Image 1 (tube, one colour):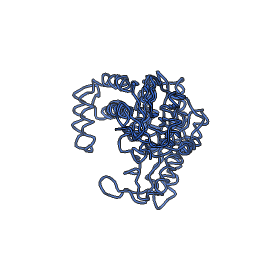
Image 2 (cartoon, one colour):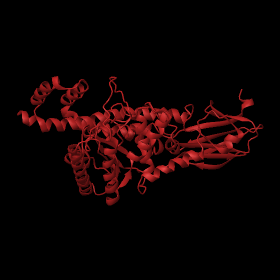
Image 3 (cartoon, one colour):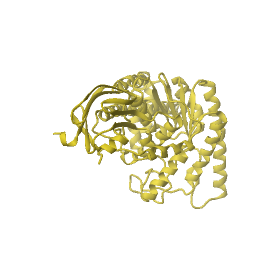
Image 4 (cartoon, helix red, strand yellow):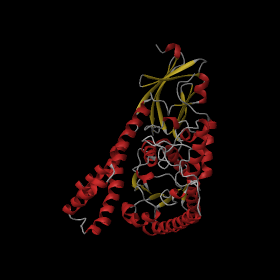
Length: 467
């Protein structure tokens, strides 16, 4: 009968199986933490860290926790070593998340005809990857000795039989590529255990999820180019990260019986009033908000791991038989039977609640911040590095505005259409980078302020008496 999306305890406990893919749990991020996500284009343009920041903004609104995008498209573990100091250590992180591998293992070596040359090439690439990742551990320990280290195995290569890209053309399959990147995942697992880092085994968790979904829908595609997985898969990656942290699953947990509050977890309940027909009204101040979901991930929110980390449970005991309607601030939220209310209704996914609306406002503001930080912290940093490395080969000085303009004019005809505007903007605002980085940092308290807990008036009435 309930019109609120709820999940059974079995679904929540099923999500705990994700723990098998993670090492010993790390602690949740805390007030004052600065978290840098270091990776390739899957980090640079991917949304798993945006979902993580959505979670922390809504679940820990009083904690000043800042996330930084240090992904660069096309990067591999060797290039990562060269930019670690500038892109990671310079941000004074208290935690560093590392994910490389997609550009290391050589998916183009994987095809229907496997040659000895290809086998040797992949073996060399994995050996280089192992050496680079080991060096990356050493560099992190040397330059950021107090930072907690999270090692993420790379995301899968979508090995669906047929994938049509955004241009409608079939994307080359590269048989064996998903297994090939699994070799990188094995290196990360070994190194995480060796160095005591927190492992987040995205390769295992996401492959399992993709296979499960594809059994129900064989034509489902998770990466239009086979490499950059969709936002829904990034959401599941964020849940795997939270599982590795043993993060808080509860938004709030409230129960009332016969006019008394008998449970109040992460919430304050006050001003309780009952009426002659068994109805009850009360005021609630929740300490956090449900996690918001936007950006085309709706079909993924039924995953057990998503439900597990989004529990906003309200229960009523000893109600008379029949259906009871919940109102919040005068707005009808949902109707459920007395038995359903006694089991507890999860309101976290109910779009009618004021908490959901507030959480979505936080998510929209965070999305604006995320896009800007992706441009300033990630894309421009990479382009500035490219200018400084390539311009001297053209006898041009990257510190001279006229030389930057000359190099831009020479390169524009060679660029892909989608690269033109970022290149132009990087040159135009070259001297503003410090200010733009500061603006990205300044956005955090502004977004967090939108998640400030608010008082709401609840009312539960017999459905027959709602008019």
